[in-house]
Length: 453
Figure 1 (cartoon, rainbow, N blue to C red):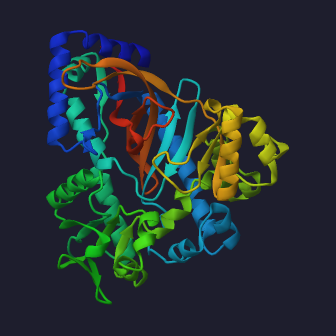
Figure 2: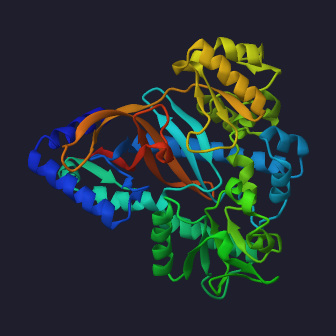
C-alpha cells in the first residue's frame, strides 16, 4: 500500500499546475513559518514522509520499550562510577549528573533516530540531551497538509499529521510541578536558553510564541544574560521558573566558569531545568554499548532485551579488549579490522556527523587510519551497520529549476515526551549521514491509510 501511495502522489505532481502551485506555496510557507536553517530551506521537498498506521503503531511500541530500558541505565548509573566510566562520563560531567533535578525522568524530551524498512526497524542514535526540530516539524506539518498536491492526495488516502509543541509545553509544566512537589499557583515563566546566533534561533521563536499563546511568559536568552542572586534566576530583569535548556553541555563547559549563573541556580534548586544535566547519561552514544552488552542484561526485562536485540545495533566502546559478538568471543580491534564492511566508528559525544568513519565506503588504508584515530581518542564506539531506508523524493533546488526526483536516505525520528512517543519528523539526505546540521533536510512525517470506500 505504501509504494502505491507514494507512486500516486508522484503521479499527481505530473500535473504542472498542481506541482507549480504546490512549490510556490511551499516556499511561501517556509519563509512565513521561519523554516529556514542557516539561510537555506529546511524542507526542500514536495512530499512528506509517509508511514502506514500499522508501521507507526509498531514503531511506537518498540520506542517506548527501548526507552524504558534507557531509563534503567540512568537509574543504574547514578552513583555508580564503573557505569559512569563505561558511558564515558567525564569528571566534570560526573559532578553535573550528580545534581538532583527533582524529577525522575532522565530526559523528559528525547528523540530516537531510526530506519524503518520493509524488513527491519533499527535505531542508530539517541538525542537525549536537547533534541531540536519539534516546533519546526509542527510548522512543516501545517504547510504540507495544505499543499494543493496533498489535498488531492487526501481524496484517496486518510492522512494524519503529528504535533509536538503542545506536548513539549506539557512536559515542561509536568516537570515543574514534580520539581515543586505541588501545582503552582500561577503559570511559570519559561526561559529558552542557548548560545547566541544559532541556526535553531528560528525554532526558539516558534516555541516562544507558542508558550506565550498558551499563557506562559517566555524569553529567549543566552548564558551570559542570566543572573543568579542566590535565590532566584533572572534574565533581562525577568524572574525565571523553568529553563528549557537547548544549550548542550559540551557548549556550556568552556564558558561555565565565566557564566556560572545557570549552574549555580540549578545546583541551588532555584529552577526547574529541562532537560537536566542527567540527560547526558543517555545522550552519550555509549549507552547503546550498555544496552547491547550481555554483562548488563540483568538490568532489563525479557521484553526489553528482545526489543534491544531486534532493534538496537550491536555497539562497543572501541578499545583493546575481548568481548562477545553473536555469542562468540572476539578480539575487538582485530575483529573491527576484518569486518569494516559492516561497521562504523563514531565519537561517543559529538553531533552533526562529525568524526564518523564509515567502513563500507572506506578502503583498507582509510579504515586502518580511522581505527588509529579512534583508539588514540579513547572515546570512540564501533557499531554494526543496520539496514537503512532509501526512498525517492521530489526535491526542489531553486526557483529557476523545477523539482527533480532524487533518492534520499530516510531517517525516521520519533519524539518522546516523558517516555511516550508523541510526534516525529523525518530527516533526508543524499549522503550516508542524515543530519540537518551537516547539509541534510527534513520533512514532516504523515501517517496514512487507505480510505474506506
